[in-house]
Image (cartoon, rainbow, N blue to C red):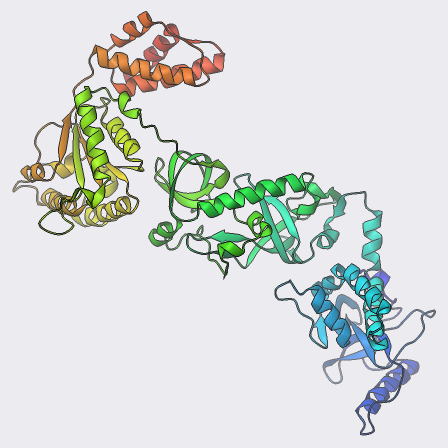
Length: 638
C-alpha cells in the first residue's frame, strides 16, 4: 500500500458540511462538466485527459459517501475532462485517508491490453470500466514492463490510433506514479534481499515458486494471488494462493483453494531463505527442473495400484509422520473408499489428460502417493523419492529350514495357484473353493512367518499380515472386519497371513455359543475366499473337524535342531557381511552358537543388537559380541 506521505498531502481534515469556497467552485465545475456530457447535444468536445484523482468522503447531510477532487501539489497541472483512469482515495468520516484506493479503468484499449497480458491467468480479466481495489492494483504493477512494451509497439505501428496510444500512456503513467515508492524501496534493498512489506512484488500470478514439503521433498507451486493477513493474535502473514497438480488414482489435474503462508519478519531477508520463493531464483534452477520432470513422470507411472518398496518417513491421514520400512501398496482409490473422510486424497478440480501434460505440469505434480504400509498397517502419503520398484528374491525359499521335498511342494503350489483359472479346476458351486488355504502349526520362532514371506515372494505378491486380535471378539465385529480384510487382500491379490488363529480354529461345543458363532463365520468366509490364506497356530490339535475339508495343506513345525539353528546363524551372518558390518565369525564359532537352544526369532534379535553394537563401536562382529548380546537377551527374559 502506498504510504500517505507519497500522496497529495492533506493539510486539514475535510469538512463534512462547510468546505472552502474555492473547493465548492471546483466541485461545481466538475458537476457541470458531467451534466454537459449527459446533455442532449452530446458530450462536449474537450481534450481527453489521462487521470483524475478524487476523494471518497462521508457526507453527514446525505449520509452517503460522495466524491471530491483530491488536492494536488501546486506545481502539478490541473487536468479535468473525460478520464482514462480514475483514482479514488477512501476518506474516513473523520476526514482521514484510510489507505484504501478504488481505481476505475475506463479506457477500452487499456483494458484490452491488460486482459491480453493476463490472458493465461485464470480468473483475471479487465472488462470496460473495471474497478480495482488495493490488492487488485498489484496486477498493474506486475504488468508494468509488458504494458510499456505494448505502448512501444503501438507507437511504432502505422495502424495504431492516437486514442490507443493515449490510453496506454495513461496506464503507464499511473503505474509509475502510484508505485514509485515501491520501486524506490526495492532499489534501496541489498541485492537478492526483500522486506516483508515488499514480498508481494516477487509473486505475480502464474509465477512458479519453490518450497519443500513435510517429507523434505522439493515442491513447485503456481501462484494464483497473494494478500497480507493479520491474525487474531496480532501477528501477520503473507498468504499465497497457489495451485498444483495431484492425482486421486483415477484423475490427474489441478486442485483449488490451496494456500501457503510466509510469516512476518523484521528487516530484510535473503530471498532464497524464504520458505517459498520464485523458482527462477533457485541456484540450480535448470538442473533441478530436469530432475523434477523425471520425478513427475515417475508419479504418473505409479498413479493407481502398485506394490513398491519404501524406506523413509510418511504421513498418516492425521498429518503425523511415521517411519515406514518395507513394502507399500499404492492404492488411493481403495484408500478413499475405506476412509471417505480422510484429508489426504486430493479432490481434483480441473482434470487433465496425461498426453497434454507439459514439462511445467510435471514439475508441479505433488511428489507423494497414497497407499497402505503393509508392515505398519497404516494408510498414508508416501514420498515418491523414497519409492523403489521391488527386486523379488526368487531364491528366498532356500532360507527355509525345511527338507527339499516340502520346499519344492510349496514352490509348485504357489506357482500353480498363480495360474488362476488356467488349471481348469472349480468347485461344483461357482466361485467356491478357489482359494488356497494353508495351516502352519508349531512353536514360536520355527519358521511359520518366514514360510508366508517365502510364498509371497515366490508369487510376487504383497504379504498382508494380521493377528486374530485385530478382528475383534464378537461375531458381529469379526463378520465385518474379516470380510473387509479378505476383500482387500483379494483385491490386492495378496498372500494373507492370519497369525494366532487358534480362536477361529477351536472345536465348537455346546458351552460357548459366542465362540461357535465366530468359528462358523470364519468357516463360511474360507469357503468363498479365492486368494492365498495362511493360518498360524501354536497348537497341534483341538481344531474343529469342519476345517479338515477347508485346509488345502498343513505343515507341522517342530523345535529347531542343531543343524537347523546352524543354518539360521549362517543366514543372518551372511546378511551382515553383505551390509556394512565386518564379520569375524569362524566356522567353529558357528558350531558353538548352534549348540545354544534358541528359536529363529531369538537368533534374529541377537544378531540385530550385536550388529548395532559393532557398528557403534566400529569393531568387527565376533563371537564375543554375539555371546554378550545373547547374555543380555537372556537376562531380559529371566
